[in-house]
Image (cartoon, rainbow, N blue to C red; front, side, top):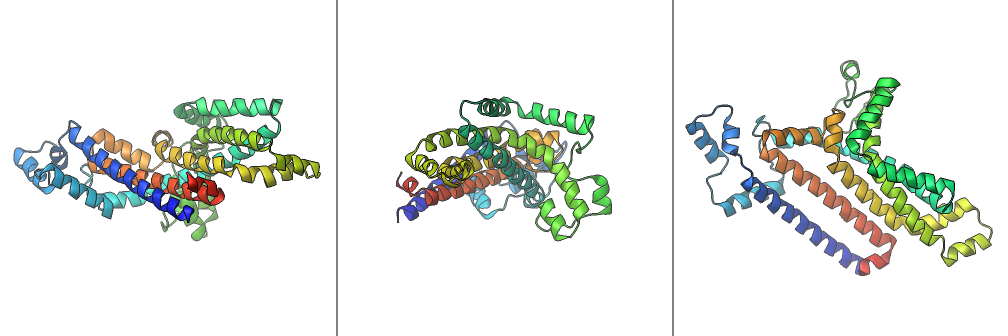
Length: 340
């Protein structure tokens, strides 16, 4: 019963977050020094064209009415039309969002795959050379700027070694000779569904470098959080009893200690996914990745408010949903969480 009440409370708080972001986005749009009607009317518009655009965009309505219209449109997924391209924003999101989500999911998996086991092994070897080396690597991965790491990986693996593609989501040759029909928008999944192993391998190669770049920071965080939690758990009585019974070190670490450290591991999942979504802007620009990052950066330069608002709301909803899932998972793993 406590867990159900906790889940309902978290859902209400999540809804408040979405409403607050909606109000904040609308407020920022009103104070930005730009004229949406002039941008919508096209290059060098006349006064009549600007006035007509103002009516079409409902900019002559009272401010509360405009906010209610904006909020209801965001709630129904009606993001409107881009001022710059005159394309439906929803159609653009269907094309760009899967690319960003694919990158975010893959980078989160890499961060957990490296960060959590390193944290476990560092805790088991506390104070030894492996612990110091792993801690130093975690600090370096957290401290290194994303743009520098991206360019460093490009220099090493693309320019010097020539084993990884420099940019893009797939090679132009593969896109022409072995095209993959878009079903889910996730290129790896679509290539498997279409039975195109060459396209899958090519897409995987293009995904590795940007995913490694995004995974660097959360992997360091995962390592440090897991190490701290494991050090505390390894001092508990049931771990001492397991050692007295002669259980192997591997079974003690991964079978008895790590399940008790799942709280920090679940937190890392949420942090990694959120960092991948919000930090993808710079990475997508450097690697020419056709995702939301490049899409919204071009909209910011053009002051295309509907695109900026739509991307902000989509990222907010993804972040809120992920955090809600993590909170529910933590409450199921540790029922004491539901009492807080």
